[in-house]
Length: 412
Image 1 (tube, one colour):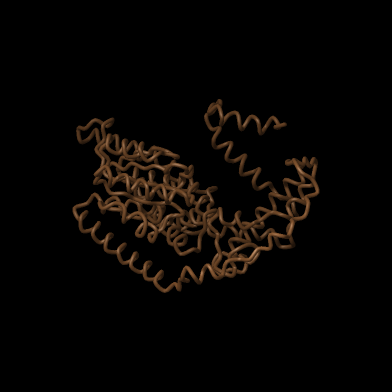
Image 2: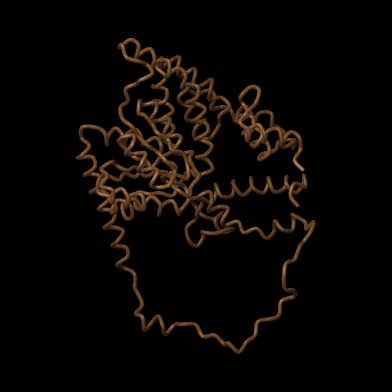
């Protein structure tokens, strides 16, 4: 039932082969086209001026253009802007440490402040990856020439340190981890990326075997938080002394301070986003390592004390009071008899009717869009001052896709 074009794109990626080797890029473009089909809707009068206003940011400096592209997830011009920056700055690494990292810093601040959300961060990650891909060949060549000039073997480079990274067991998200790997690699750190769904035992065994300087754990879903705590416990049991970095969308400085830091005594640092990773690693491996880790430990102690203080104010009921409020059930009442018993197969039911019963709250939660009470769930989330605008934008995009699915009769 798969059309020939879709089948071709899928087979190229599944079999990992194509004539030009660009099947992954083709598949991503195809997926984006399926996700956001073109709209053939005539614009209002004066719409001819809209493209000019929309692309006004293209008149800025390459730094402004790169940062705008990163923040807004626009990759259309990134290759040309990166090349312009490289020719001006002369050294490819300066492009990363300058305009690109400044843009990532802004994204980190916006995400940390709740002004930027997961869908936008994912788009930004793709732009960053594309930008670094332009610079990578130049940086590799620079490293090779530098090694030859110093009389060293370019195939045996000297690194500033070795960092092992992995997405913990049960989690398949690795966008942030991949960006961290790129940033650290560009700053001459050897990065050992173990991929996703990595069990604790394999992480620790590889860390010991490779004699790494730092272990970095990544995760996006909530169960990953418990897995990170488990890894920290196992590191302490094994008597390890390697500092531990914690990162991912669901992680936080408070969770790291309260749950993870208490399980391991040799340095646990929460990294808010990829732009901070290099600073953290250089501090951990620098001359002031002990004082840096001690400062982190003191900071996390204060966070724990503040957290525990919030729990003291809760008014707990006594056991007798709780038992006195137990529900009373009339067991003499018989539930109504169901209309049928067994399985019911509904064929060709209108998708448009099913759409009306979608519970949108989990949809927004997946994208880390959580409003504050009483605007926590759908549809009240649209009223939330912090996430309401982004939630409505995401909701409209989802409705467009559903309309397309109904129109094309894709699902049955």
